[in-house]
Image 1 (cartoon, rainbow, N blue to C red):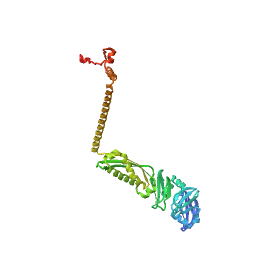
Image 2 (image 1 turned 135 degrees about the horizontal axis):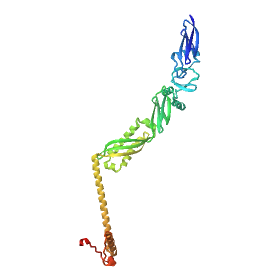
Image 3 (image 1 turned 90 degrees about the vertical axis):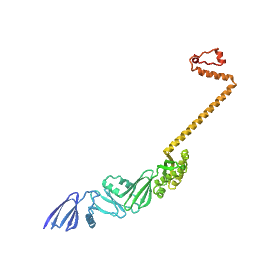
Image 4 (image 1 turned 45 degrees about the vertical axis):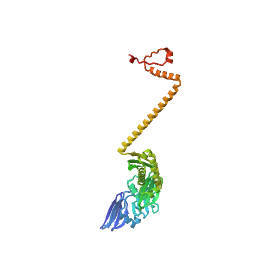
Length: 387
């Protein structure tokens, strides 16, 4: 029986018309009528969102490859090679990233769709302008595609980075943000801090030459000056430097007595630095300074040392007192020799003493007048005893 078939295609859909299960045409949105005989015709409706990222079903893609002329106005088909990355633009706006060795299609809308291919066979570093654009995207779909497609490394100021591709070092990286297509490769980025750094070697318990146990804390200032040498020669440069400082500290302390260590701690620092600096320099590390922050004695040794210090200070105090007494006696002896042959000077000294005495009493009786005071020997009487 022949009857009229009416099909309504919504604006958000496309229709695929089949006759006897053979593809005939792509139907746009709208109302379509055709005469059907024994249900020869069938229409398959496909949802179209207008977004470039909308996935076209595999069966539709196959039909498009079989009938390219019939789908040309409706689909934009793309395919990337083994060493190609596709950038999908809609209206000159980047919408998606297509991996290598992929094929697909996008429904055409009002805005033109274009897939620009990039050859990554020899150079898979992302151009700086494109990298900045991709790293700044906010659209969730494109951002997810970016994180899946790119290997990103941010090298801070004062650091040096190293790019390894498939286990082989390819490039030394300066400070900044770098990005690479990570398709078909294993990409790894390591970095070294080339700023001045501090290292602590704490809690080292060591016996001195005279068998005194000490606990020493050591600090060192160091810097990487040849990052490539450090990376090539050392698996763990910080562990290497720590061990060298530890061994040097033990070597120096074990060959000196406690008195020698306490007498000149700077000598300890200088000796350790000399021992370690030469070894570290061979691997691109400069040892700037070494300092023993703390030298901790055992409890019993602290008490003994305190007694020794106290005895030394007492001996010093006694020596100073004896020196002052000797100097005072010598001064008195010199004064006496001068007065021995000079009666006037002796009389002046007597009057000086009298002046000091009279300053402490309230009443002074003078007999013989001024001439007696100047010429006679002064006699003092204690009235309290006389009474």
